[in-house]
Amino acid sequence: MNWIYLTWIFLSAKDGYLAQMKKISQKAKLRFLRKWISIEKRLYKSRVLRETGKTTPKTSFIAPSYFSLNGPERKKLVSFIKDIRDSIVSGSRAIFIDFRQTQKFIADGTLLFYAEMDRLLDHHPTLTIRCMQPFNKKASQVLQQIGFYKRIGKTVKESVCDHDDVISWRVARGQGAVGEQYDKILGHYDGIITEALQSELYTGLTEAMTNAHHHAYISQRGDGIRSSPSYKPWWMFSQEKAGMLTVVFCDLGVGIPGSLPHSSDEGWKRWWAVMRRLGMHTRGDANVIRGAIRHSRTRTQLHNRGKGLIQIVETIGAVDDGQAILQSNRGWYRIHARKETIDDYKLSIMGTIIFWQMPLEARP
Image (cartoon, rainbow, N blue to C red; front, side):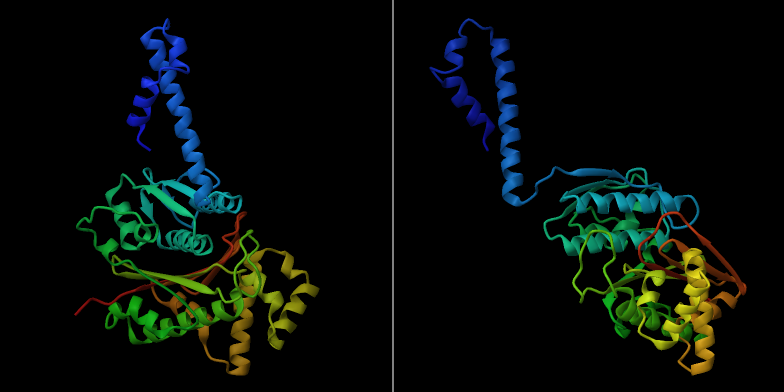
């Protein structure tokens, strides 16, 4: 709308309000005119919102300083993601995220955030997400490297990244056990991961992909967003930093504690029945996760079912400086130097995050 033209018409009118305001000062006339134009602008914007289906104005959120799923930063990140999701479930279709105070992106928390935003955009075609870039240059380069700016349609000035641990971030998404996605994200590390660890990593990730397809999305997630039965994605990050390789896998399903009661496998059904009789299923998600891992170990030995996820958790957890962390809903399980640690948080991530970290050999 041409506001200058509209103003000229208004001032040129020989009848109406201006005709009745000849004795009013020019300053008062201009003040009235500005107010009238402001009202017209708001009416115009409201009409555009109705016509485009955007029934609510943009909702703004301030991003946390640290994107991490460990320690006190976890609560801030999970609450931040939940607030965005709840706003969209309530009808908001224009989201603005202020990253200006964000200082650091840790692989696990960053993957959860990216996967959540990706899922929201998948389910709501009219949703727009806009953002203010972090003041921290390195943090902004991470968002660019993982493809977040591209995913939300934000154009940013390409900058030369001078941080090795940012350039090394790699991202993959898929459904089912997709071997080429493994090569896309981890083929770069051929020759610097020991042969034994590389084999275990491939086996573990393939098992995680298969579990996501067959078990993670066995029912609705319970966050107010209904998904198609065929919607079963997983997301994966890798990062090389200071001689260590970090691989993170994520699905946004019902979580391990949520999927076990629905298992059709007779062995798992009997185990879950025992857990219920003993009241173990009410002692927190972490106990359920540890119980599932230990039961997997027993079933692997008894039924020769293949090594799968439990093998990579134990193999990497036994390597010097290696560790594996499995988070699902409120619980987490960590194995490092053959020692297990578990605990529960108050807030649920509503899904599963598997984190592996292992040393790399020197590049040839």
